[in-house]
Image (cartoon, rainbow, N blue to C red; front, side, top):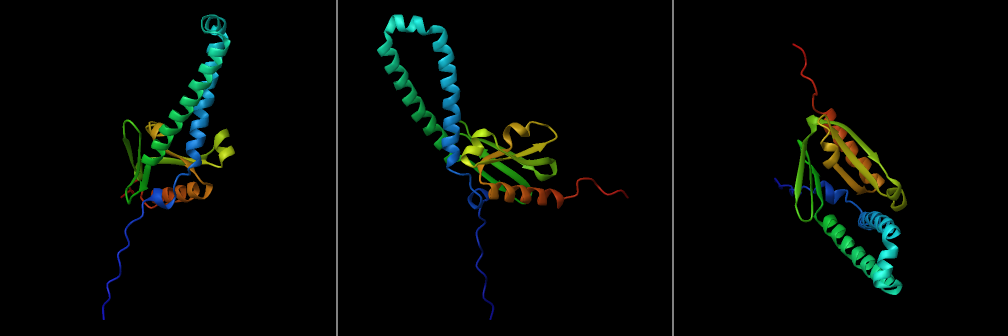
Length: 176
C-alpha cells in the first residue's frame, strides 16, 4: 500500500541559522559611542557658550535627557531592523532583505560570488557575534551582501553552504 510522504515545508536559512538578539544591543552601543564622541567634541568647543546661556545644571539635565531619548530611539530602530532582516539560500541565489524605513533586497546568483569570509570587529568579540561577508567581482556586494550578528556555528554553516553551491556549478565552460 502506497503511503504518501508528508512534504516538509522549506525552512528559510534565517530561521535555521538566525542572527542573534545581541546584535541589537551591539548596534545600539556602537551608535551611542559614536554619538557620545560627537557630542563630547561639540561640547568641548561650545561648552562655555552653552553654559553661559543655559547654566550648568540645565546643560547637564538636557544632556541626560537627550542621551536617554537617543538610546531608546536607536534601540527601537535596531530592534525594528532586526525584526525585518531576512536572508535565504535558494537553489540559485543568495537573497538578503533588510531595512526599516526603506526595504531593500540584494539577490546574488552563486555564479557571481567570488569570496565568502567571516570576521568580527571589536564589539562583535565582546558580544560573541560573527559577520559573514559575500563578495562579487563588482565590489558593490561588499556594501550590501553581508549577514551580521550570527553565532560562530551559524556563520560557518552558511559559509559552507554557499561555498558548496559555488563549487557545484562550473565557473568556466569546458573547452571543446
